[in-house]
Image (cartoon, rainbow, N blue to C red; front, top):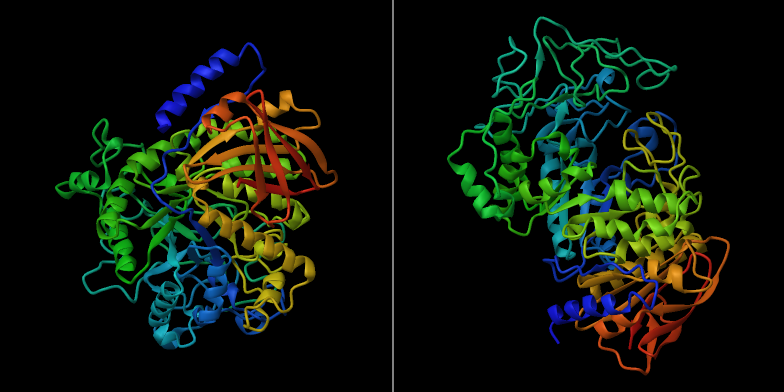
Length: 625
């Protein structure tokens, strides 16, 4: 029977049965997927991955604390990442950004610590988009070639490459020494006598000079060290607006003072000095979007960032993660992403967008492939893990995102968020297990993990700029649990504790199941809300749902309770039994994570019953045999 007939049958049966049983079923078939395989992104902070130095001196120099290199991603390392169940690597911090280090003999200017966060610098204060961070190269003169070699090794390992593009802002001292001759630098042709011009790359405060923020709470750049350039002065006249939108010539220390805001043709009053997309154009494909912009005049910043993206695509990069994409107009993304897709239709385009009201526009009008599912699924799972929320709040999220759920990338860690194992989050990486199962299996969207997450890294190092609980992205640091897996660059986990080995084994089993399961690219149906009102010993610490396609049917049950196990008869309502076209008999179910737990789906009077026993923090992925 075709799917549409099943859906009609489900609606009819629900209508007939609503008087007989108290049901909280919401029909949510997910047939929005365009990929045949679940995608898994491994975010890695590139300069930290291969660093085996364990000194971790606060504000330590590159010589004291060490740094990883592109060459640390050996064939063996990449094979191990691939075998974890990964399809894409997001190499974070690749474009040349501000750092405190002397590379002047290579023609690279020194950076002023008054406008650099940390000693190793923020990867989101890019100084030169046409080259890579010199810290990451063994031979600095050959740094771009070393990254190209890494791209090739990554592809040979069967993985795709993602890097950052930060369109909203650039470093205060942006100057490319590597750009092609035909490229003009950001700001090079700006009219600095005015606040705004549609083709200026920046916004200005004419006749005013930039002033370094007033440091508070004992903070000084580089801690106790006095650097020759640390003098509370950074020469910038006229002053530019700051990256987070501050118009002050002296931004606050909590502003993104190390960056300047890029102008995309929106006046200070909010007027858009560019064409807007025609009504209904959100339903057109990227080819139509590309053709729409071909004969239009667009602001100069649009052209610059499009050319940057195509430069990296031509070097073999397979996609981008766009920082703070919602701070840039959606029309630009239509222009940018359609240009990229014309070059590489399979490019992986991921955006940092936090406002749910904007999701559909950035996906449909902006032609984004994926957005962070942060404020809904991540925040809700975090509350459940910490004991502040109930699993009852999870199923409604998928209903709210109906139609775009495939485009919402799921994660429990990234460079901006607290480590699961940190005391500020869960205090124990084990508590993330049920949430990881839910995050990775509930929709057709990609899953992302952050390097070290799979071995329980807790982000506790005091390294300089910023607070612990997040592995520092601003300073040179060793990542202890991850280093135990690196094991002197053997990449074999030889120094991991037994619990760390078991945790990594869990991630490997889970992620490999997700990329091989056809059911996870098919349909979804919540079971949780129905069982909350119809099943004894089933509570707000548990979660259950079904995933299926024509070839595979699985039922996923998770226990978020770290103290208690549960034994209950999970019920599958009559409508869903008929939807799956199951008969009144017994079906064997086998867990797909550890292949040890077996039980039966017993159907009586057209209702299914599954005898489930869950240990604390345990999940089962039960496949009908």
